[in-house]
Image (cartoon, rainbow, N blue to C red; front, top):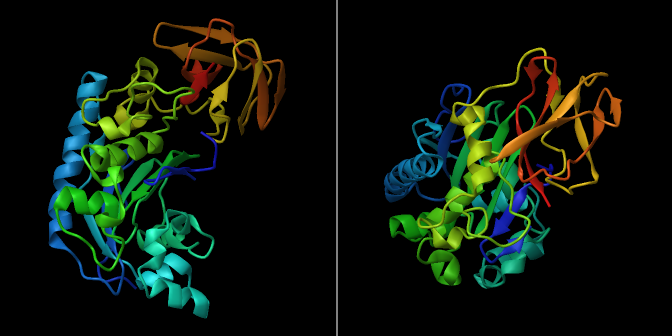
Length: 334
C-alpha cells in the first residue's frame, strides 16, 4: 500500500488527557479507541455502541474468511489533551478561522472538512492515543470527526483507521452537537453505511486496497454492509496476514515495504521497495487460484524490479530467500 493514506470523507472525498492510556497492546491485535476532545463531554452511549459494533465487525470478518478473524482488545476511552478547535486547527489558529469555527457554516461545506485551514485532526488523534505501534491496529472512533474516514497499514505492520460523528451518531442514536451531527449528511449516515465505513477502513488497516474497478466488495461498496462481502483475493490476503493468524515474516527473509505500489500490470514490471534484498532473492505472486515465482530483473539493497507474470491475478506477493519468506503484501493486478 502506498504511504498516502486511504482517506474517504463520507462526502466521498478521496482524499494531558483525562484518562490514562492502556498498557502496550499485544502484537498482532486490534484496539478500538473512543477519543473525545478536552472541551466536549464523554458520551456513554458511544462506548456502548462501539463495543457492540466492533464485535459485530469482528464476527463479519470471521464469516467472510470462513473462520479467521482478528484479535480484539478491550475498548480504550481517552479524553484528548487538546480542545476541539486545537485538535482540528492546531495550537495557533487564525482569527478568521476561529470566527469560522464558532459558527455552523463550515459544517455545511464538505470541502472545508479537508481544507488546509483544518490540518491538525489526524495528528491530534495520533497524539491522543500515544502514537501508533508496530504489529498493531489502532481503530479510532473520534468524537468531532464529522464524516472523514481514513486508514492505512504502514511498514512494520503499523495500522490505523479513524472515523467520526457520522459513524458514532448512527450507531448510538446520540448526536454530538459540538461536532458535526448527522443532519449535515445524507446517504452517508443511513442504512449500512456507518458500520460499513468502520469495516471498510479496518480493511485498509489490514492492507487491503480499493479494487481496480467497481465491484461487489466492502472495499468498494461499503454502503451495502452487511450483505456485501470480500473478493477471493481479499480473503486470501487476510488469511495470510498475521492479524488473522497467518505467518509472520521469517527472520532470515528480506523486509518488504507497504509503500510499494498498490497495483501492477501483467507483462510489465513492478518495483518492490524494502530492505536487505540480495542476489538470488525470488518474488512469488500468489492469488486465489494459483501462484508463480519469478526472478527479479534488477536487485538493489532497498529495491528490486520484477516482471509481473502474464497469468498473475490480484492477490499478494512476497519475497523468498531460499526457504525463508517475507510477509505477504496485497497487490492489485490488472
